[in-house]
Image (cartoon, rainbow, N blue to C red; front, top):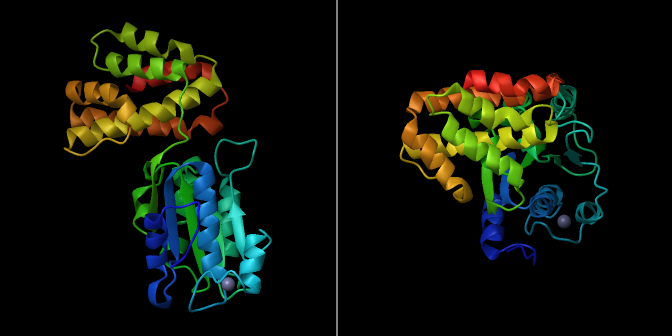
Length: 284
Ligand SMILES: [Zn+2]
């Protein structure tokens, strides 16, 4: 049994089970918790994959473990979005897919850690589908994400999932919470003016727009879940998702969800943030 003071025995047992009887997961998702925890757990799992000891992994003693500990293992490749972008770049994801077919250097296996895939849009996630389904036997993928909600269903169905509990590092500003609360009421209002008023603070405010759209997507998702008899994930926005679920049909909720997700995905290609509130109003 692996030991690691940073994680609960429950998490470690779950991780260990993926490696039972010499197996090795080819695609894994670590979600929830905080970013630091996700990163550390991804590194631990990567070390288990590259470790040369077949019986106890990670042995902590082999050359592969040593390099993994020092963060210098050539077969553990971490990929993130560029610092100056909001999302992963398509070309980077394409490179990973092409690179995944090259054989490892030191270890029998190589691992790609795709870090914080809540920052990877649907188009890029789609590029990963084939490789996640049938990676070469020497390649494994570890995805981390704030929430599994940010991962498209077809990717989710191809990974084993390790959940660190409720996401801790999603924090929203008061202003964003205020806009989302007003929006949740405004969408069922007969007055167009209510929507215009609710979205007005977004004009020209890029940071707030991103925050509001991310939060509103999560609240809409919870509303869809409530409407379908499921559970909600964001307890702190229960009032907003309940109001949406009470006052809108399932079809309307799904249409809004699609529309807001589409708008969110278009942000990187849309430098004109001033028009976004109008577009958002029109789509709700
Ligand atoms: Zn080892």
